[in-house]
Length: 123
Length: 107
Image 1 (tube, rainbow over the protein chains, first blue to last red):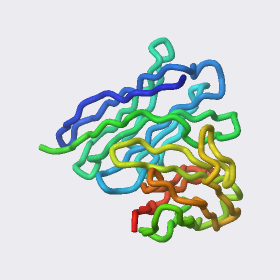
Image 2: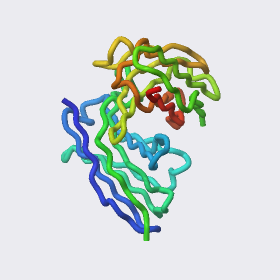
Image 3: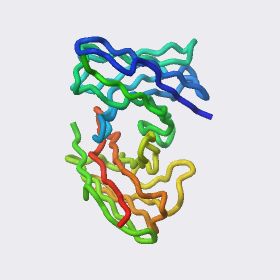
Image 4: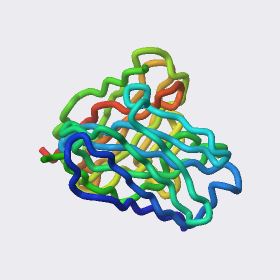
């Protein structure tokens, strides 16, 4: 059974760096095919894809946020970490991590999601 | 970037009725389009991938169709639990993009 769970601060100040951790189980990114993505959703607004990391450590980023994002994985801990620099109040959102089978039939769609974590940016 | 436009923004129907949700892409995405359902306070759930394939465990009343730029999610007979937000997503090109959503509400 695949599960994912996000953790990190609920409140950050403007200009600070946000670090979110996705802890997962039920799959191994090192075994091939698995990817983990980050998606966010401002309150009352639509989903926005942020980043994706492949099992071979290849990475993809949203072009509009690429300069502020870094995604990494620690396979020994079954974790994927997203950092976002220079946080602004417009970055207030629920941040989700999600699994994608990058070689299976539903590749690049997100078939398992964490519960999400609400991050508020405010001084 | 490929822009996905969903219509209508809100759809008001009654249980038992048929729901038809639309997603239009700003350029062809072939059949690389999926649909998600999101209920309040929950994460999205994958319903349909590659235009017409139901994800694991998804009820048969959900179906998807379309190719190129125009796609449809159909719910054949609405159950009370189907009233939610629905998003489309394309995987044809980077960046992955989502539509702005359609809210399906009880009439």
